[in-house]
Amino acid sequence: MVSGDVLLHPQLLDEAAAAAQKSGGNGKDFDFQPLLKGLKPYVQDADVALCNMETPIGKPPYSGYPIFTVPAQIANDLAVIGYDGCTTASNHTMDDGTQGAVRTLDALQSNDLFTTGSYRSKSEQQAPPILDSHGVKLGIIASTYSLNGMKADADWRVDTGVNADRLIQRAKQARNAGADIVVAAVHNGSEYSTRPTASQRKLGRTLAASGAFDFIYMHHTHSVLPIEKYEGKWIVYGVGNSVAKHATPTILNREGISVKATFKQGDEGWSVSKLQYVPHQLSKAPVKWCEVATEPTCVPTKDAKASLKRTQETVNAFGAFEDGLTSWQLP
Image (cartoon, rainbow, N blue to C red; front, side):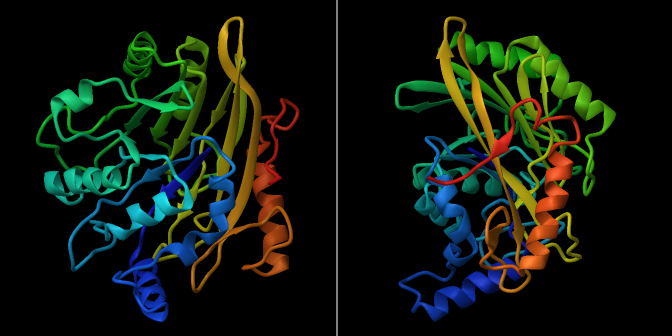
């Protein structure tokens, strides 16, 4: 299961602080559980759940756009609801410099969350990015198109660039290191769009046609983009935000999808046998992750129906439903 950007704007920190105070704190200054509650059953319905941790972990006072720093409690709360790992390559990875990039990895890994996309050392970066789940080795190739003009202190600090040849080379290295399944997690695209750019679609199709990847997904646009099956491989061009509260909220940056890819082993290796998605909308205040495919509990029914229709039209723009994409329904 893959989901979108964990992008903690100041309002989310304020609401998490209020939630911690309301519950008595239990030694915590922040409580993100109310924000994440709706997402939890989907995370726990997957063998492997991956987030994209876009905002670096910092120290008080925390900050929002354009230079983010957020509390370490988010790492604990993501682990508590069942996430197994997070990619960490984004245009905000270096917002708090090297110390922020390292602090983020420390926070995630101290909560037993797998990470890839940024690194503490060159040896970490050179190690195969493989997550073992029930004996199946999952290679995760992460990269970001940019660091927002920031410079990392070393070339190996963050996986940057969306060059197809380089991504394919890294995928082959993971495969040679024992990965049974290889996934691309690319931070790329045009913000607040509903369609991939020409270069983004070319990248997705090139990765799919290469045979090096079994599944490709992208984030960064803060909006849902279409899903496409190309050369037998699924490409998710944009999962939207997982949790966020932009200074200027729009309907697009309040919506997202989580995608469950079921892999099956055959004579020629592992492949996606089923692809499912669940659409969500983020409520206004307090912000909560709210699925909109069934009877909504935290957004108005009218808004949920409109959101569902809009998301269905977007994800199906390239014929995904005909190719087998279905709604993710919990057991």
